[in-house]
Length: 343
Length: 214
Image (tube, rainbow over all chains, first blue to last red; front, side, top):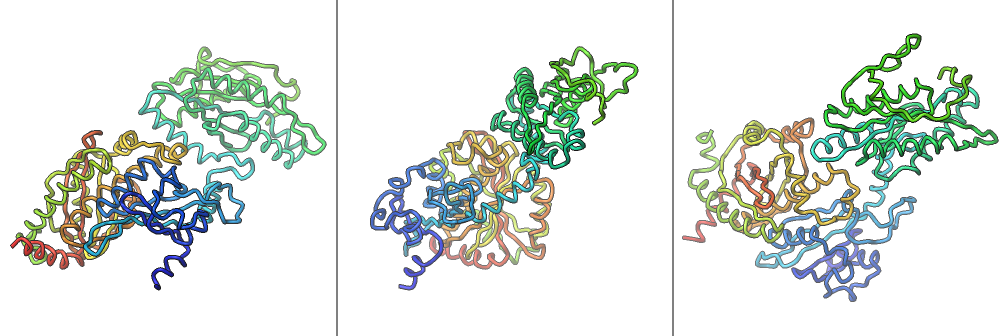
């Protein structure tokens, strides 16, 4: 009597399945959240009402519970939920379904033989929402909402490790907004922030979901393009360059126009580290700046080569590259007067 | 070390436990084939009684006998029989197991590869530790409850805090077996540690087991 009350009073879902996966018990919490009354589901296979549960993963865990007396754990972090129930939290989360932490365990008869498995379902939507927010705070830039430098470098290392083990390649684009200091000085920092935010949102809406785009610092951004050879990366960079150049950044009543310089590098055999690849893209970016801005430059060679800068120009390159290894796509450059201003 | 622990566990008791583990692991191996669809070969288990303080160095010595880089899955269990199960696998095992067990699990597509590996290691560790502990429990007519498994990497803080979690004043019985997944050519080590407080119960359970055959 008391146990049956607890079964229906607790604030978690409890389901009991027999060895054939038929529902034997379905508590009140499950009735309310699933909108399936117990008289309708008891005696039927749980897959009749929840066909998406019928996966090798679920069956493997179920079998290990009824065979060995194991416990199985389905964390919300990876599985999100076992039963697709509507969320009840009013936190304004973007989750379509209630996030659940579920566990499965064995139930034995009086002879100590496993006859059933129980599943507990705990609503952890609120916790998952907080976790999501904390994660976003730690990996995103607060102004532009794109990834931050720390996250980018971590993912770059991961991608580098992955491509060391498997065939394929990836490219990175380093981007820098030309003369950004002028935007701040001329229109104020609020306008500068607006330009950075809009710039980031234009780039994000013009790359793939698998690409990793981050604010690297100040007005410098970078983009990692998985499974992308340098020719394709150059096309992407050129498309983005044209898109930014043609956009009017309308801040209140003031139209602002900007351009950007980009350096592109591809992972190649002989690239010793993720850091050195980033350095290559950065070198190409410096070269794009040096050659007049508003252009895309690539570096092909994996070796560190050199280029002699004009005699009257101090070299902007921390590591120099060979002229034939640099290919630039040059476009109309900014007026000379603007180009001469320091950034 | 064996002599000073003679009072904790006699040679006869070790022999009985050895016999129980032979039966249990044979049965676990057969059933694992049905559950995860991979044949798992478990070697004849080796039993030792150690000071808990010696476990970390024992583990390091044993874990590195084949490969330097390893992944560890640890899981505690409690009941009359109480202790920990520790599964030691080569680092590449997680990735290889993904390809065998991959069944388009929800969420795996969006999860970075490191997360997928962790999840697969936890699932396999949970099943393998549970199968071996569960079969021993079945023969000793008891059952246990498990805590969620966790993955520990052998570098950095994770391993250090794991090692520090052992109470050096205690003694433990270590049951060790080498396992081999045939389909994916992965092998590793499985340790089951029994806490000192469960040893007295274990001794009685072993004698009860023998009495049922006399």
